[in-house]
Length: 190
Image (cartoon, rainbow, N blue to C red; front, side):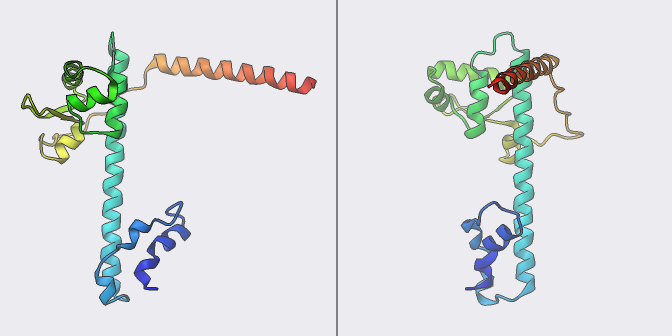
């Protein structure tokens, strides 16, 4: 077996992946002609490193989007379908009113208003403004695809944690601990 076919097993054995990933077999086509050339291996590993760095950048952007949606939902007097839109944009980041209407069970008009509301809150960007073909996407994708200029200067800090949420979680933890104590006393009586 050629060395370049062993890469998924090597990464799995080194602990980089949970399972061997067959998609990594493709590698660099130059391996077929010169399987022992270290320059090809370096180039391929550099490409993998760049792809992994790009993936981490995307994950960071998704986390920032999630925090912005959370802050907007917490501050909204009537959040309506914003939480559902946030969940939908996590799995389908480019959305149209038609798609949102189908996925969330809204009318096309209602989905368009929801997307416009999210755009006015700065949560999404309207990439294509034609009435018949409206597309919305998160800000980081709009920059990546060239629909918006990259922000200049220092990046904005993520929104602070909500005190109300922290208090609710602390209360829940205390109730859960009390419940576990009661269950433990009942089990010890048996």
